[in-house]
Image 1 (cartoon, rainbow, N blue to C red):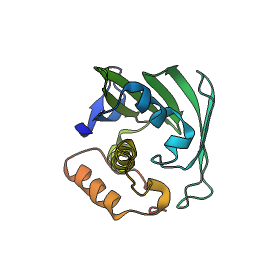
Image 2 (cartoon, one colour):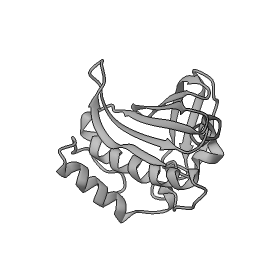
Image 3 (tube, rainbow, N blue to C red):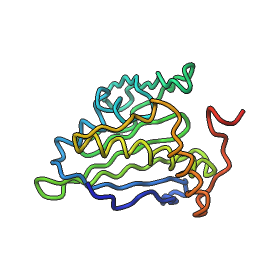
Image 4 (cartoon, one colour):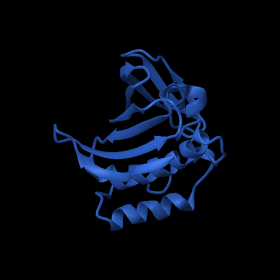
Amino acid sequence: MTTTNPGSYVELDDGRPAVRFERVYDHPIADVWPLVSDPAELAHWFPFPEITVDLTAGGEITFAGDPNMPDMKITGRVVAVDAPRHLSFTWGGDELRFDLEPLGDRRTRLTLTNVLESADTAARNAAGWDVCLLALDARAQDGSFDAPHTGATPQWEKLYEEYVAAGMPSGAPIPGRDA
């Protein structure tokens, strides 16, 4: 696995704010697609371990079971599916986009774009996705890593502070920390 974009703030062509990450995995696209589309695989690295998805455009997707926020359930809609190259869905007021690009027969580039409802969530969300992607990276390499929902991580705090120090927009409330 190679990190080609460790996390950056971008403004999309339509002016919406987003954070973006890129990884290159030493696996064919057919092996990476389930990691971002199958609820059983998502549970290993996504912020919520209980996931259901109707993998069709307009289908419902739900997220629950975070022990840090036991009463929270997020329901969204699948925006687009083009298996095995693209999946996007709404996540609260945000949109998540997973784009997969084959690099020959044995490698795949994954681009995760979190289109933000508000720019001030950039540092918070980037730190969260950083932690999640560490778990995904380990999963893709047949390793183990504590899933992001297994408890509060000092690593998230450190990453958040680094993003803020680097000038990424911040200031949004942090669930479980801010009242």
